[in-house]
Image (cartoon, rainbow, N blue to C red; front, side, top):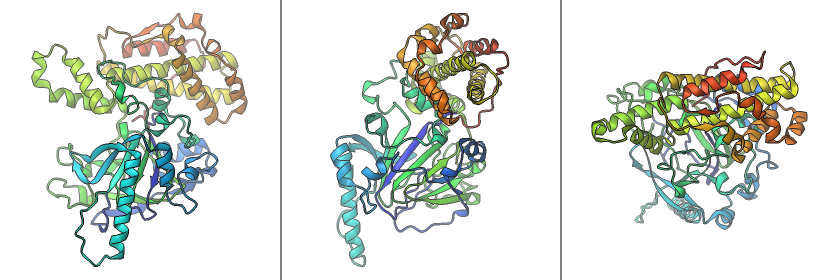
Length: 503
């Protein structure tokens, strides 16, 4: 499955009303006319197995608050970043990470469909937070008097690629429920853009993964949205409290205009009934996330459920339509569309197809290795093999959808060369990471010890793999490669899986 967004928060106020995922709650603003008719379930994550979590929440696409999973032994951030009094440790941030450049949103200023952002150093962001805190304290002390001083906008640090920037500082260990994370597993070893025209060295970090740190003060908030690539996400709260409001994907149309183009920006604003005729009918769920709790945000809440390919296809069609008037005078119209798609969405068809091709190859290598090593009978190794089989079925389904849309048809440059991949240390690392992930998920410690002693030469039977398609150019090539690669596995049957959480 794709989990393209994971995050954890440091909130600079125990009374924070920041809304991640859906809502704005301005300082001093009342709840407004929205219809809240339910709360998000809260469960002890220690009492759930991986399979129970998948069945109860992931497969049903239901949000949940998980407690008991942020043990300080595994979450260094929960001790380093928080004082003994439970407040954010500003000095620690300034001393250790102050020179980092981050994106900071101005919660009081709208820019198109998002908040206005500026780049600044972490130390400057913290200084602004402290300035706002001092100003709020003065205002609370003398709340009945008028203030003649300039107002200070509410800053909100967003999308900080902390894990990539500080790989040696292990701020947290990803909970087992969220380790099956295709996109981040891939991006830990490969870059997202294969086209040199869309690959910019100075943006290496910002395109490197989808693990983020967010920091907000009281009054910070995020406009109504669904997560990156319409994926599922999880968020751990290190300090403070956050209030969330959710809208079920089945009601997504209620927050869009009549043309299903524009979404409500702030649900506590005066929302025009003529522009958003269904908004007043929306039914929201809410919860307050405390420090030490993790919230699971399912795919598509609140938007329509799209898998990543459908999202790319939709954005591609919009980008293509936008520049249709220059098609006749453009030497490489399709190339321009793909470059615009990469700039606007974060990846284009070539990037996405490269990603699923490498991931399919890794799963096939591991499946065939498990089959050679342990056979295809029953038992724990068979359970892991079934996981690889389901992944391949899902990837085959995506390739079939791409083929039906004629994506990359006539592509003359190969996307993946099998022999080159087997000799590429990045691919070797990807295989090892994917293998360890599923061994951990299935809690098979004896397989883990065996796998740690395995080399790439052990994983790959080159004579075996050479008999299949050696280069992949198009989705049709990928389909044939998967089919040929599993044909000799006998009882191992690859079935195209429904895409429940691809987003």
